[in-house]
Length: 360
Image 1 (cartoon, rainbow, N blue to C red):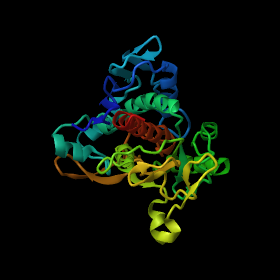
Image 2: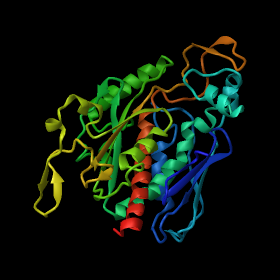
Image 3: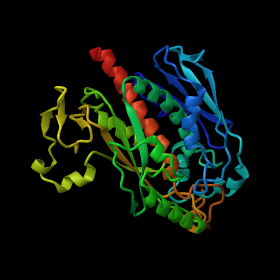
C-alpha cells in the first residue's frame, strides 16, 4: 500500500514521527556483503535532527538497532530489519493540530484519504520516516561501492543563493565541511546566515539538492516503464517536501536547439565510447551510458511555521494557526543524505536487475 519501493533490492519503511520508533525492512540484499553498524550509523548521523544551529532542535541520537539479516559483520541474504526508537517525543506540542489543519501539510489530505491520522507531529508524512530510507541507502551504497559507484549529494541552492560546485570532482569531505552541506564555502556562509534570519522570523525557505553518481556502468535501466530516470524521479519525489526533479540539463535544456543539446560521441584512450558533453545527465533512452548521473531535487519551504496563517478546523470552521513544535527552518541540509539514499537504492536495484537479466 505504498510503503514498499524497489524490485530486487526492496525496502519497506514503517513508523510515525512520535510513535515508538521508525525503521525499515530490506529484502533482496545479496549475502556475504561486509557492512558494519557504524557504516549505517554514519549516514543516520548526517540525517538526524539537532545536529546544528540551522536544524530542528529536536534531540534524537537516532541509534540504529539491527534486528535481523546480519551476522558477524556480513549480510545473510535474508531480510534485514533496522529499527530506530523515538526518544525525544513531545506529542503535547501538537495538540492544537488534532483539530486544526496546517497549511500545505498532509493533515487535511490524510483525513480525506483515511478518515484518521496521527496528529502528533507529521505522523507518517514526517521526514522522520526517511530514517529507514537512509539506513537502507547505506547498505545500497556499499553494494554500489563494490561496483565502483560513488554517490555525492550537496546543497546547490538555498532560495536565491546558488553555490558553484563541480559535480565531477566534489568530495564528501567538502560537503561535510560546513553545516549547510554546500561545498562552496563562501556561499555556504551566506546560506547559513539566511537560514538563521528566516528561522528567527518564524518562517522557512526551500532550495535545491544536487546529487551525482560517478562510475555508474552503462546498461542500467529497464525500458520502457522502468527507465532509470523515471525510477530516480519516483524515488526522490517520494521524499517529504520534494516538489521538482531534473536530470542533466533539465528544464534549461528546453532553451537549446538539438545541435546545441546533443551529446556527441567519441572513443577515449581506453577504447570506451564516451560523450563530449553530458547534457543527458548520464542516461539516454532510459539506460545509463557510463557518464556521471546528475540529478537535482527541489524542496519547498518547510510547511510547519510559527507565523500565523489562515486555515480551517476539521469541521470546516475558519481559524488562524501559528504552529508549535520543533521544525527545520530549511530542510535542505538534512535532505542531502535522503537524496543520496534514494539514488543509491534505485541504482542498486537496477544493478541487481541488470546482473539478473543480462549477467553483467
